[in-house]
Length: 523
Image (cartoon, rainbow, N blue to C red; front, side, top):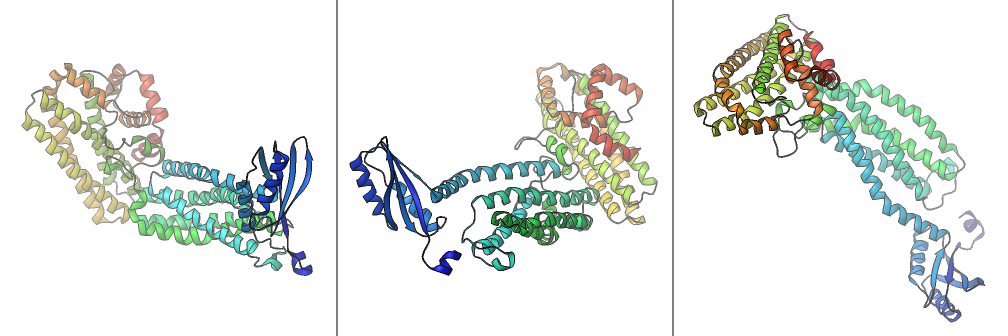
């Protein structure tokens, strides 16, 4: 371009046309057809040997321009009457590279975005946050592409940066930038969302969680961006245009991502989305927000099917014994919650109690789902008193209301500890405790005698098989919860139903999240 401006004359581009197995007369006819292509200046022979002829076509313009690429595609449309022709040269290399990138870029994007969506869902237990993260990343990446085009293709700031603009971009540069920048931007997103999720688990206040996440990660993200900006920005001082382009583009993307995107767009978007930030499909709304990450993913049932989880691990009447053990665990946690509230917990303690209570509520709710969905209908088919079953369902509804009331009271206590919220929480727990204890005694005294004769029927075997469905992660969580502070006689009897190595493996290895996050609350 400098030669053209200083000394005049236009730039001429060429393409090599290699004809193989083409008759001499057809070669001449082919050359004439190529000359007739609009824009072609001339076609001259270069070499000929053993039935192979090399021609060179020339035209005005830069070899990398759009016009040159269109002209080369027109040349490839021209075919000799015999043999075949191969078209090469700088323009042909660019056309082939662009075609290859265009064909593989969608697959690359699908793989990258798909993996990111899955990993972020597993990390944060939300289907909204991964989509938002991808969209936010695209803002900084597309902004950097615009700046790179404005500078290196249009020639702006050329004198300041010390390069001669070529009027086009290397096709591989944006692809390399896309891959690197997507990973770096997602890294910052994980920094921010991890802190936001931690605060959300503690308070379940979306605005507070977003504010705390930005506050706690702002210095880390800014420092990381400055550090990488210095390292990558150094590429911008290179005398090689490709390296300079890479450095400037990535520096712009990093600065935009760490400031405009992470400090402004992400918090604003999460503020507007509110509780939708934490949306994840599942059959049990009470569980939403109580579990996160891999465990949350594992306990979700497939769409359209309600699953009560691993409630029964044995056969025949042993299932009723397991039911009694579950009742014991429920009574234990209700008692521990009441005792903890009597000790005047501070705000941090109230947040921990809320988290542990949500786990209890989820376990009890899923246990009731199994009864409502499978056991009561089976008993009705086998002739059980429908009034008794209706009463059980009514008690489940009353318990669900009481469980919700306790959670609301604990949320209020964790958000604004005071004598009023503490007394309200104690009152709700006392009410819930009475309802739960009355229902469990009613089930043990009146329902189980009716159910025992039915445990030898094929219908019971079918129900028990359905109740066994669930993931190993869920089984581990269940057994860790079930055996926590279990009385020695109950633990001994459980060992007669299920080998202790099995329950130990489930509770110690697969139930580590319960042992690490829930059990210490009651200690």
